[in-house]
Length: 544
Ligand code: DGJ
Image (cartoon, rainbow, N blue to C red; front, side):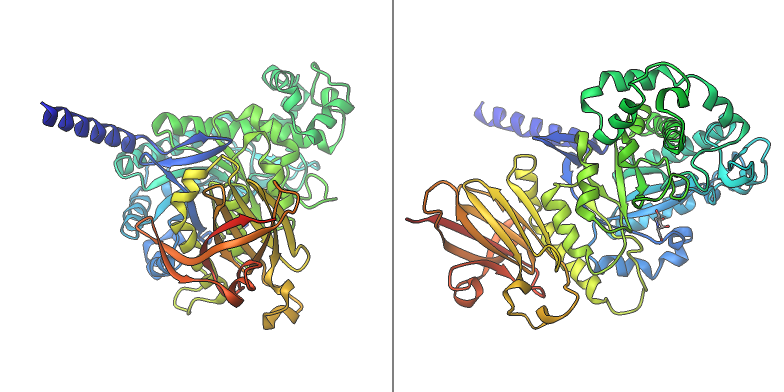
């Protein structure tokens, strides 16, 4: 009897596990954060995006795979090109997509597909020839002076229909070949949508829409979410008297800012319909990426109307079938932009960051501080065949330690127990609180011990700190030194009871070295040097 009950319990556990594993990849709320779930388990993207043309043939990919292996990635972001998927209208070529999926599986990599459809960096360069050549059926956007652009207008029903058809076929096919494996985990419809060189499309179709009333669904969204709207957008609406009726210029005022709002609504609406149609076939989560604008540059001079922070409310209103919006980094002010993207519960994912010597530290910071869904430098394959450069080795080491601490990140996600720091010459110190302790993190170059500290450029350093008990913490990172203060007692004094350097093997913590003496500055600091990506477990205590 007991044996039967026991067996039944085991069988039900296995069934539940199987059911969970069959679920389509999706986002799930945990505490105050979101998490990507793949095959029933949390999945953190330690990613890299391929250069734009690398995945156009499998031959071109051949030398790339070993390179990707050496970087400890678990996901690659790879374009799927409309022009190659549907070179002739209605004739679909799936081989490349299928081969990429099969090969990615062999390399134990997940895929995020970037659908280079109607728009790639504002332009329509990846539309198939039959679209490009038929400008009657697939009209172009026009500049203010009436010149046709190499940009498809988002106001054409024909274009939308043709693209929906292609994207539907793609998603149906991915479902067919991959739903049982879940190699493809995320989709990005379009790439860095944005209007150039005028802030809005001045084609006949666009002009007609511009004169119409602002659609009721948009106004209703603003009314319903008024207290939650991003302040910079609320200000624009307020400035014109919170109008709820009228055409675009009447509701938002005349000017380039209104041109951008108008375009954002129609770009978002179009992309939403692509995403929705794809989800009807296979409901993978989708996100849209943005080319960040530079301050003091006017709409139209930067790729405007993408999902940028100042118009994200418009995108959210018009694209409920898009799960989140993501910043691409080729600009400075990493923290500033990320802070703008995590508003209104938008989970952070950095799908592109210039592959420079800051990425290793930023991966740690993004995943620690923002509890992001993942991080991914752009042009990850660099030059296949060449030995790994310093920045590549560093990223590989950082990805390895993040992968090891994944169980801790999953366990403590969304509970205010995880922090991340990013330090450089300009901001070489940061404070944060975990439990009863205030931490001061310093770039270890501040301590003057390392020879490179005198150099003009400091390699940024970064770390993730996780509180796993009242007095117990894990540190993963490099080039960071931690000082602690006890916030509970008047004296504020804190001692280090124990610090171990180690690693996780099969999710079990294994000590490699007990740290003391110089390695903890005689018990004063937790520290790791710039060339020393490490995981440390430490225990603190309070004394009078
Ligand atoms: C951002 C785009 O999204 C990428 O596809 C690529 O073009 C980079 N810029 C720059 O190389």
